[in-house]
Length: 444
Image 1: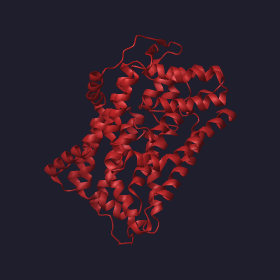
Image 2: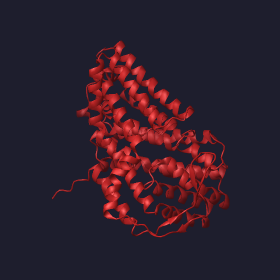
Image 3: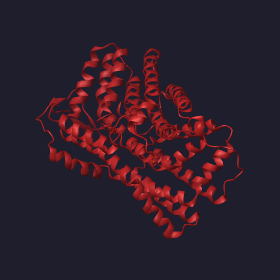
Image 4: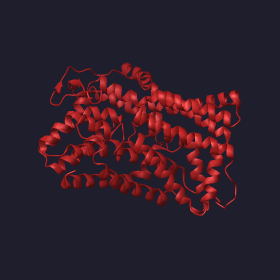
């Protein structure tokens, strides 16, 4: 029988089953927790770890956690559905097709310029907003664009999701990553910006270079990019400007007004309605397009919810704290440079069962802050270890529901994705580790 790589749903269900099994193997333990005034979140208390009575998750309880996880991630699920509906509305107006055609015609002699610009835009979105789930609905249009430019569909995922993950991991301003970590550890917000932006620029160049080199179709499959002279219709231009303004307002709302998923969902709902009316779809046409979008995004939304199920199992089985304690405890006996490398790799491992960047920060930063003080590591370097280890793992971990949803929407297998990115991923990880060592020696 020919081996077939597991479907994204099968991958997540396997991870859920594995998590439930681990609750029977790994000893249960817990840290005490307290409210942090700086962030308003509940954080762990350093040095408070203790073993507790085991609470393994049985077969039926593990199954129940599947719908519970989807409910637990309801706000994200709703956001995906509404963004999906809004983007189908925009697609029905023809604005995306017109925009892609105009873009290809403008750069018909230099398609790589379009790829570079798109990569920079998504990297900036990740840098400012930790963009992940918002990309899911854009996949059909990204694939259409890369196809017209002569690039494989996996390049559409790499230039969008991959670039956004890099932006988030190396960001000096990511509100769900570096800023919350700096607040918890009493490090001045936005400090270390120049250092972070320098490393960000280096790894983004590595990433986009790899896509341009390896993502092109064979010459026989490249589309004819001959200039047709078509211009972007005024109506399509208005719709695309409205989409751009919506994303800009979303980022501003998150950074300045402390918006959450529900505010973002409301914003995209309004955007879709206005785009439909401007595009001449009418109320009924816009409503039908929304309904089609909900259907297309339903599976992607479920995948994101399932990733929450895995975390719920590990949390209720009370083994997450044990995993964290086991990974971090040996680091205090190592030289600072080796401790930093171990800290980074430990954060990468922890991000598999804890796919939330902010959740990982409130779990690990309170423990690593006194540890870094004890061994003579700056808190800024300790935060870099969290960023580069944990957040960079979003590019590759199978427990990242948004990644699996994007791959499912594009028809790209998880194994194909790993095969495409493992070399540049290791290059970027190596660059990150080297930058941490440099950070130690220059005293950031």
